[in-house]
Length: 169
Image 1 (cartoon, rainbow, N blue to C red):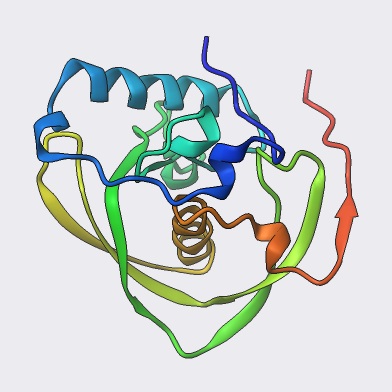
Image 2: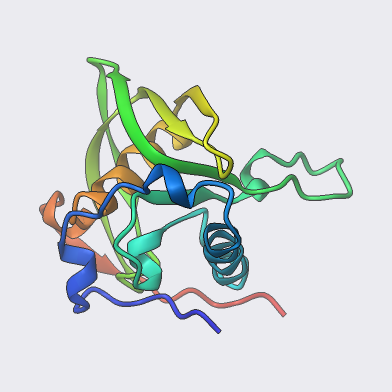
C-alpha cells in the first residue's frame, strides 16, 4: 500500500525528474498512477496528488475526478493525469486562496496564485495535451507543479493555521 509522505521527507524538497519516453504506456507507469489514485481516493479532503507525495521523484500529478463530477451524476469521473507538465500561461490577476496539502496535514494558509492557468502535459500513453482552468483548477495546477519543483505551499504563505478535518461517517 502506498502512503502519502509528510513534509519532513526529502523527496518533497527536491526537483522531480521528467518521465522518460521509454516509461510511457508501461505497466510500471500505470501501476504508479493507479497507486496514486488509490492513495488520493482514501483522503476525503484531497483533490490532487503529485508523485513526490508518494515518494517518487517523477514529474507526475493527478487531479481527482470527483472535482469534475456533478452531484447528479452517479459515477465519479476518472482522475486526470498530468505527466511532465509545464505551465504555459498564467493570468496576471492573482488572488489569495486558502491552501492545504496532504503532505502538510492539517495546516492551511493563504497563497497568492494566478486566477487562470494553462498547462501542457502528457497522458499515460505519451499523448501531449493542453488544459486551461480558472479558480480551483488553476490553483491546483500551480500547487502541484510547485510540488514537482520541490516547493511546498508553506514556503509561500505568511501565516499557517491548524484545522482538524473530521471524516464523515
